[in-house]
Image (tube, rainbow, N blue to C red):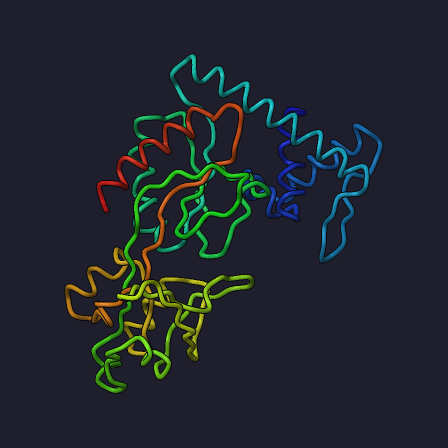
Length: 297
């Protein structure tokens, strides 16, 4: 492995906080990743990382070395992007992230056709309903539902994504169907929550304008598909993107609740870091994905 590749290993280990995670991200075994760090430390005669059984952190000199190594890698990536833009043949890895349900249903199916047309491009798709730090995790493209707030990222809107309140016929038969938003207070509302999650209320569209409803319930989770499954099993009312529950509504497994006062739609789009030169392979996939996804809304 070259010196530059060892730098990449070191940078990812620092960013992800462990040799195992950093190696896995680059498709290396923990032993190989650990040897790359030892090679760098032997090269410079200094310790770059402090290792304990529970935690790995850069030393003071390791932190300074990381800052410079990160800039070297960014510069190299920009140089490769220049070459790719002239050759017309994109090369390298694209790192993507998306919410779980959206990623499974909408993003993952787009990758194989793109790869078939661009055999020099590989993908690393990471799915999570939790907030992802795009800069720290070195993400090239993040598909996103909600309101972007980070000015360090470039936002590209794809569509407004309608949301619906849904419950199973069995739940509504047992607990009644709410006729007004106020009646949600008496129901088991299923919430998407995780540390620092923004969702502790629902905002419904009413004749008087948006209305914040402080809803609650016995169950919450950080996985949107679990919410849908709980609703299907008759445990409560869920606030879900329309595309995720369309088939279940059509078959009658779920019922649209309060259709006259639906939740506010979510903005659906993609985020990329602001860079002087965007990598052609990232730009090409973003253009392709946006074009294909707009057909679905």
